[in-house]
Length: 221
Length: 221
DNA sequence: TGCGTTATCCCCAGTTCTGGGGAGATCATC
DNA sequence: GATGATCTCCCCAGAACTGGGGATAACGCA
Image (tube, rainbow over all chains, first blue to last red; front, side, top):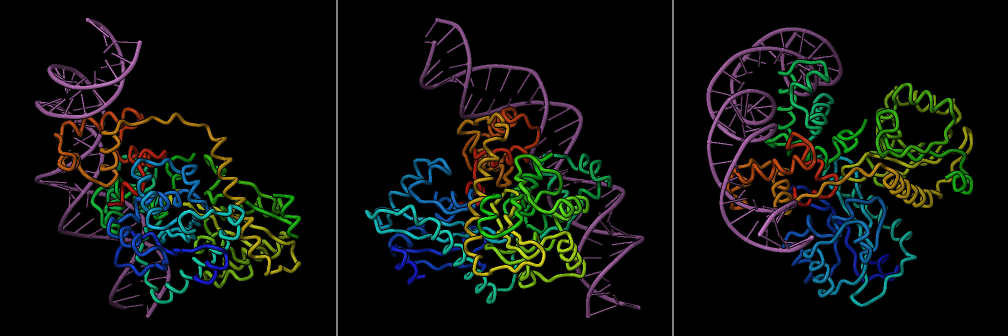
């Protein structure tokens, strides 16, 4: 990572899983950012709210940090985070998202020093390097941590959760699936148990987040 | 797609969301595969069980079809599906997965005619083309999608919805925001009205979908 | 053959949500 | 000065959900 970062003309890199919920998980975390910024980032738990991370959750290909507002709208807090990163020595950069259903979201970023100009023609190269770097890191980390910590639902449970996400009541779900209401209640109960949540709303959102169901399941057809 | 497929030396391409049937709402479906195979694929609903699709759900970078068993283990049924595709005229190919949290899984594939040899050194190029093609298609499909009126929530309503999405009860939300429970009930009620939904679960998901709240609001901090 | 998983169904008590109906205060805008 | 939007609070009845406790049957796997 250090070598290719330098070869591509960048100063810093970060190859990371966006760990928010599951701190115990063994995840990819290979970072060469200004120490100052890394510490502040962790202290303030920005992995979830950092605008670059957020933007990387809404796209399939890499993007320049300076163009992040074309992906998400920036709040005042976002702008101050970006300004703070700049102060800490991080200039413009590219982030390549890396998402796999049921796994932690991640990304691979390359950054210039503050003040340096980014060459936008490099995006394709960065896209390639970022994707393959992430995949390599993921494979290595999987060798060391074969355990999957992401709960999976049975087919029936997933069907029920998808309908829960559509705002259906248990009775309505029972009619749609042609089974008893008690059965639906049980499936939803089991699904909640697997995720360790107590509310169907959070169940639906967690299932959405890690790909057990998709927005298409909710809005489709 | 046709041009670049030819330019890269391939015969067939498929740029698709892995949707469980007919092209769903806002889903991408651009295919130039042998007609015979497309029909069989749809008739037998292989979207979910097709080994190439399944493998694409477990990786971040593209792979050659002939190397699919390095990603997933193939059942007898899988092998017969692959053999059938070959019979229909599909030779070896590359598939580049495309995943975005909360959206339909998708992929971009390029294939040779049956019998032709795949040049494995092309994987990086295919990876790039596939990723950017998918992103482009995704953006276009969004533009053409009937822009559903996007209700906006007041600040207080959005705060309440974000906490609803976290699975909090109205009472818990009232404690967090330091207001009365009745007020929270009212805000949630108003937010439901704006979206025209009757369940807080669907409210939370709709708000997530059009960016009124984000996954970071749900899992962060 | 036994064990685990899944899917199906049932009961009950207590909590939470939903859908009606209100009202008063502030603030900006017209 | 009126009007609309927002935020705050209140009451109530009925529906829906949650968290316990059960049960049976089918299936694959060891």
